[in-house]
Length: 601
Image (cartoon, rainbow, N blue to C red; front, side):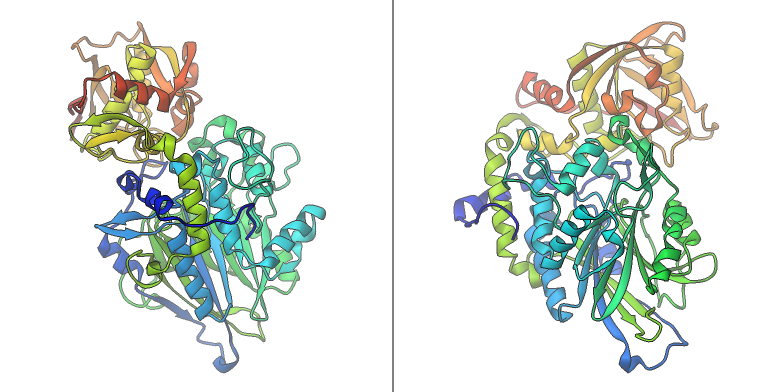
């Protein structure tokens, strides 16, 4: 265990783990998708997929390996609830993974597919997400730390094999605070606000890989693109990637100095040198995915065609790729998909936030060294059944210490809400919580209007007492508010950009204005009318003061008109503005009504 202190679990500290559990309600993806999650989908995800090479022989000689994939942990150290049942949390996830490792005879490798940190609850985020990395370090074996030390001493060492049992890759949220902080979190070093729990903080004691993010000047990968791990006498290559659209969903300062290459092209470019090393079993771990909505029957008889960007990536992957462990959409995938040549590739994704993992069973022919059989189930990590009844004690101690350290700030009472406010959108794209946040930002900056991006709203707000930790979980990014002036014509252009150049509609949450849009009108011209809440139509040539967060102000989420705004003034952090707004209201405060966005057709 590579953290500085021994931990003891006291009853009082353990009780801290339950503080305001409701704030960890089902999240929303930073891209704006709601989680696709239900008990029905969980059951469907747990239905085993299966494929076997019909030409393979001598199955009695095959070598069996377990690959355990998880994704989008987002610092979810504590359990949450799903349909009224406790689920997930680091200690519970660790218990399930350990049970799988033991059952496999220690022939298992764990893989995480990005967004392990970022958009995290305060128990992780207030400690710079270091506890979330320490959690993974507890899962990693001794060979992982040895491998990391070798890589740091020799930049070419990553091409050699290791008996490490854990590998991670980058998600878009790893870039939230910039490449330098990303590298510190992985490689170690004290943060300016540290030390936190680990003294000194040593970073990840397991390999991180990524093939498609390169230094803008040297064009060299910022991390090893792949790693070869040896398990049960066989070698398996793992290649990492992150969605190439990361710069559009991360503040520009977060991706300064790096370039994002096409995912499939970058992955495929390393296949020849991997094959030269005699490795034929190849797994891709990628932070890109989709929400699987339907599947039935054995996968070998009913290939599933994945939609969206991940479908195109899988379609173009080299025939040597056998398995894709994916993420990003906070849903599940458990299907065989043929690439463009008909190669059946197993693609998995295990929901998000520690609530599930993909248990992938693999058989390798020792003569060809290739994967000849593969199957998977996506297992929910219920905390009230199975392995969840005995959470990993070392991990639980880590979580307890983190909760104890942040509790005084997290539990501070801010106000009281008469009713719950959710991110759920009307058919027009409006949400009560979005309206509330936009109001808070407009009041903070004293502007005519305010606009809030939906992907920046990470949780719902329950009725009753409102504590600081709830508001942090709703807005964890620490974006500054930015006041600027836009013409009425530019505001209409901004609203039209909710569809133009977007992978899906990103409907902004507004304050100070009312508008109507028509779904039958062409993209780029869907706005029918815009007026102030007082009923005055916008003047295309007049200047209006507008508040947005710094992510949007820089053109994030493809709102490209905002960088053209003039007379900019930087204000408070968005969270501080929300806290101040709640405190300024008469208590208990009421929630805003809908009606700011109208939809035709």
